Length: 160
Image 1: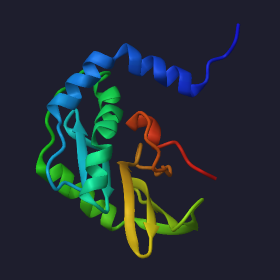
Image 2: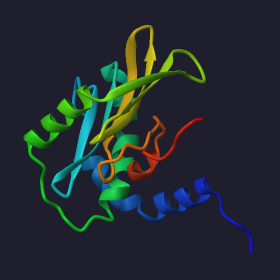
Image 3: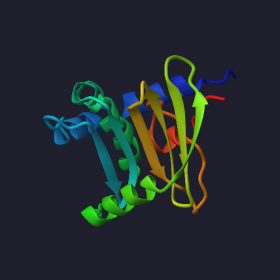
Image 4: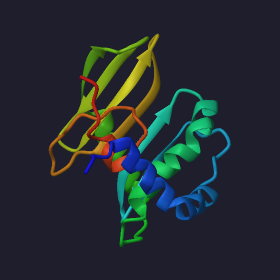
């Protein structure tokens, strides 16, 4: 019996949930001029993706929606989060500790951590090109990367 790759397994998940994912894409269309999205599920914020340009966000919008939708499809609660929840998360993110590392390509890899937040950003010529952030699990930070997989899995991907 052979083993399946993570990519193959993810492809199977996407294929099995194609109709539901398409419904999410239709429900959450790109917003003109938006540079990112804050996503809440079950009454709490679960992730944030921000880009330096609206065109980049628009181009990646459906991919991000699908990423978060994979987690939403498994969720039993539909409670809405308030604007206050998002604002509190942004305040926490603004107070996070930051470490700078060389990136694999151009720019620098900025890693954010705090007792309630974790994230990373690609910074090029003093501009944040893409930032992703998640609430820290159990009050402890684990670094994340800017990969685009199931949102709950992106927090664990990290380039060493």
